[in-house]
Amino acid sequence: MRRALSLAGVLVVVVASVTIAAARPAAADPSASNWAALRQCESSGDYSTNTSNGYYGAYQFDQSTWDSVGGAGLPSDASPAEQDYRALYLYRMRGWSPWTCATLAGLVEDSSAGSGSVPDRAEAVYISGGGAGVFMPVTSSSCNVGAAPPTWGGEVFTQGHTYRALVCWQKQMDHLGFAFTGTGYFGNHTLSVVHQLQSQFGIAQSDVIDAQTWAAAWGGQSTASPPAPAAPTPVATTGPGWPGNTAASCHVGANAAPTWPKRVFTQGSYDRDLGCWQMQMGSRGFNLTGTGYFGVHTLTALHQLQAQYGIARGDTVDAATWAAGWSGEPTSVKPTPGPAASSVALWTGNTAANCHVGANAAPAWPGKWFTQGSYDRDLGCWQMQMGRRGYHLFGSGYYGTNTLAAAKDIQNRNHLGGTGLIGENTWNAAWSSR
Image (cartoon, rainbow, N blue to C red; front, side, top):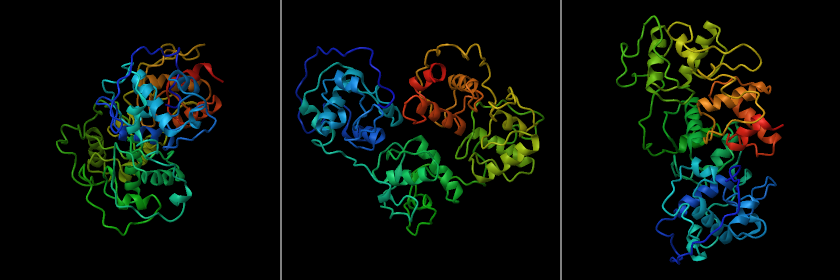
């Protein structure tokens, strides 16, 4: 819910509740596992958390929203059962919309979302089994952060699920600079970091954290025999090309690059179009065969190509480096040199005028949340405005490390929590804040 709650008025409830058996959810309410995933993402499952940022308890209520659903006192001072009940109450009023983490966790609304039906307390008991949190906070010391790896518990972690033990792996990766808070939720950011770590340690790419990938976070090698990953089939960094790609379909050896697919490829990416770029680079003598997987060989070739054509060094295959694979001439606008430029081209069609750069008020928030790895026209406008304010951003539309640093800085300056997640408040702050 953090940074997402902002009520325009007081909720007025006129619909009477229906009593449901206490041991299980109403047929249309979210499952207990969905609530657990939400709590873990919002607060690491800590019902008592109060970090003085204006958001409290396991569900990160702000005070006005807590009051609007009948809560008393501070949310973090309320019992787990009370917080569960008020969370279900809010869900019945507004669905998942108040919680940013619901989107990150991929939670889907059902027919009770926004129904206006006030639950009774018995209907909320199932959420955490009568008041005990499903996840308790996990300390860094118990995770051996920066020390020898704790023993792998034998459970393979997969995307879309929440695990208490995954908190330790994420905290260790945060210690290494990968920007985790340790929610235990396996989302897109976790998957991207998994691929980078596997590439660094020569582990066959998979979409799971098994014994090897667990140990690699602490710099070690596992002695366990991990179970085979579920899917996809492990991808080699060199080997056969992407199925269906041919020299002809990829324009290998052509005098001009095929149209850039308007996707920025980063380490860990796995994509058919990237396979074409690799095939072309292989035809020029680089150690690439066209697998479509962005590993260490692709990164090395990318840096060599950038140096050859005077392109600012970066770790992404963007419009400029895509075109350089064939001819060295970018197919889209090059960044203007200067302190606010980045190595990725300005989003085509965005201008200072249509992005309201320098305006006294922000343009309407586009209703989208931007996270690391996002690539979007509206994000390009936010970056152009931030560049005008002196941040090292140009307006590429790609959310990389510079964007993360800028987002966290302006959030911290304006008491927005420093998460790096760009939502409505952080969008507006680019235009109207200090």
